[in-house]
Length: 101
Image (cartoon, rainbow, N blue to C red; front, side):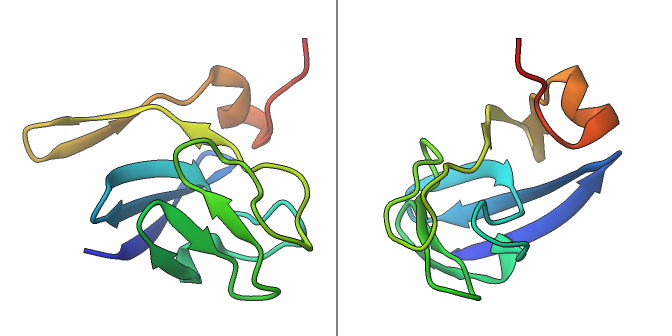
């Protein structure tokens, strides 16, 4: 427990975190500067970026500390037997970012 693992799904860089608070799926890239959050420090439902120390809530994606001010994307997931199933919007798979409506 207390681990993050990165995955590339088409153009999306995804992270799955397993903490004492459960499993979480987010973008693997810090919203402040390009850095892999899966390499960061975990505590409960918080991830700290390894580059500048910004912390994010894994449940909501909210940026909790500076220098980050923008949230990270979070994705719904469910456990089905031994599998982790993540719901990713179609626009992420082709572009790596959510398109604004």
